[in-house]
Each structure stands twice: as structure tokens, then as C-alpha cells.
Image (tube, rainbow, N blue to C red; front, top):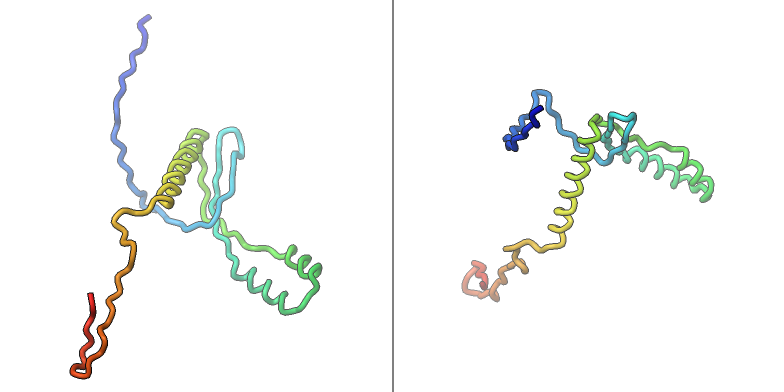
Length: 140
């Protein structure tokens, strides 16, 4: 029996957006493995405005600390789930590696000052005004 031969070929990838492609701005994510095959990741937005308004109304009632804490703990802050991704274990690992690499690079860029960034902002200083002219001259 002949041994199988493998050929190493690089294939170009072409990424195209589908017709129903959507973008979401999200503030958080939840998820995990729901079974042995699927990793599920749901993205959400937190709507804190209503919660903050309710909290402010409670503050205005001059409740004791315990009463205030009890009422706050019974309140709910809406988290609107925008979408869910379902992926294989391999795709979850690729996402993990991708995010780790991107976040590491982002953190490094934040530490390193940008090249060609001016150290001081230039503001022209006006000359002392002369009685001869109403035009303002600037010293450079």
C-alpha cells in the first residue's frame, strides 16, 4: 500500500460581506459551551439610563442606607442581546487567539508614543497693539 502524500499549498482567502451583513455596537458578551459541539457567544448592550433615573428618584426619597440598598438590589438593569454567534471549538480557539493578539498589540501601541506627534501645540502670540493700525499682527 502506497503512503499518502500531502502537498503544502497556500490558498488566497477572499472575504465578502453577505447581503444581510449587520454591524452592532456592543458593551458586553456572555456565553460558553452549551454542549460538547457548540460554543455560543451572545453580545449585548446595557441600557443604564432608566436604571440611573430610578436610582436618582430613590435618592430623592431620603431613604435609610439599608432601605436604599434593598430597593436597589430589587431593580433590574436591561441588557439587550443584539446577536449570538455559534461556533465550533476550533473557531472559539481562533477567536481567543485573535482577540489576545489584537489586545496585546493595542496595549503596546497605547504605551508607545506615536511618531511625528508634535510635543507642543503652537499658539501664535499677538504683538502689542499699535495705535497706528487696527490689524492684529502675530509673532511667530
